[in-house]
Amino acid sequence: MYSVSFKDRLNKFNNYVVIIYAMLFIASSTIVAKFCGAWIERLEVVIGIAILGLYLINIFTDKKIALKNVLLENIIAIVYLCFRAYTLYKLHLDYSTLRTIFFETVYLLCISRYILGNVENMKCLFKYLIGTNLILNIANLVMFFALNQVPGLYKSAVKYTFLNTDTNYIYSALYPNPNTMGIMTTFSILCAFILYRKTETYSLVYRAIYLVISLISIYISGCRAAEIALLVTLLAYIIIKLLHINKLKLIVGLCLISSIIFVAGISGYISSQYDRDIMYISETEIKLDNLSTGRYMIWKSGYFAHREKLLSGVGSLHNEIKQRDGYVVNHFKENHTDLGEHNRLKLGPHNGYIGMIWCTGVVGALLFFLALLQKIKRAKSLENGNWYLTVIFIFIVNLFETMFIISRFFLVLYLFLILAMDDDSETYAEGSSIENPENIADSDSIKKSIECTQEV
Image 1 (spheres, rainbow, N blue to C red):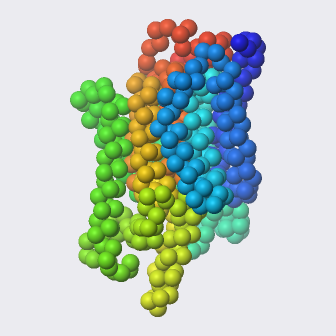
Image 2: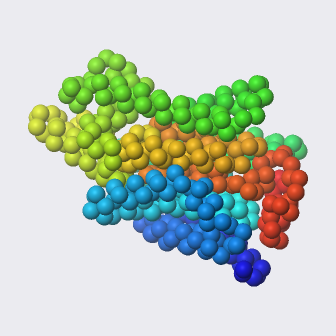
């Protein structure tokens, strides 16, 4: 049994490491990535290794933790990772696949109550996201309206931001792309709604200003994925409140299952078109492509390219894009087709569910979805408050963007952070009661966090 002082130091170190990890993922989705993107990626790996080490230290040094229970809690995730290790072996230890599996291990195993249960104040991670997003949105709006008014600003913006004269990035110069701006802003609105519930006049005024700025930012970003996901999330919130539904985990699970069924239907329809040329597109497909803003043809080209590897997958997102691109280019050359249409097919899967199937195979994707459902079932953070709204939002956005582990997008990390807010979930849910705080926290640092979080 280790000393109290060692345990307290370990708790604080857990706190710092997780916060730094979250900050890195946020930074990679902002203007910071333009100047030090490569360093951020390296640091994500280093901090990920630190989290893995802390997880093992917590598991093997705390006598209260039974290794048998840890294995049972993560049995599906462990089977999934074993399957991914087999895929890695079949791909001759491909580096991009190894890197992907490493992040999968951190998310599925290490981001857990054994790490987050010791974090002093989880809310700071969400407040950091909200604050960063608000500052960038204000700066972005000022820049947008000042570009044609301030001499030399446009050239400087092209040089030092993501502004590109050939795209609509003019509306989101401080983000890698408009979709990132829209998604981060919408997710931040939901987090702010959950965390800030005071009714004082000054608080209401600040929140109104924040909401106006955020909604304008979402509108100019033109991110349909964020807009649709926000509408679905609000609809779910209204229905749950009107019908007084208490089984929030069931709602979240049904949202995930419904999304998977929807994707299965799309994949089945694409499969029925396999006997035709990849660029042949029926009237129905034209409608689907228009409704999905060009995503349908990406999904279709991916199915054609990876059809022979649907069981085990291609290993990683890097391999998926590379192999799909090669397949399409060869097809265009063989049929003497203009490569102009090929450009839009070089993007990522733009659907996290389909992306999981292509990268991990049907077997891997099913295991991953089962592991995710198991985490939803165990997540006490979904029993109280409104954190379920953020998870529903992520699942809906994932229908249009690649938001699961294969992506390493900041939203993926926050999904697992929310699901892992387990033992101390009462401290993150506004308005919930804590009957026995002493049973939740066994150290002074955690007890202080309970008092701190109840003040908001």
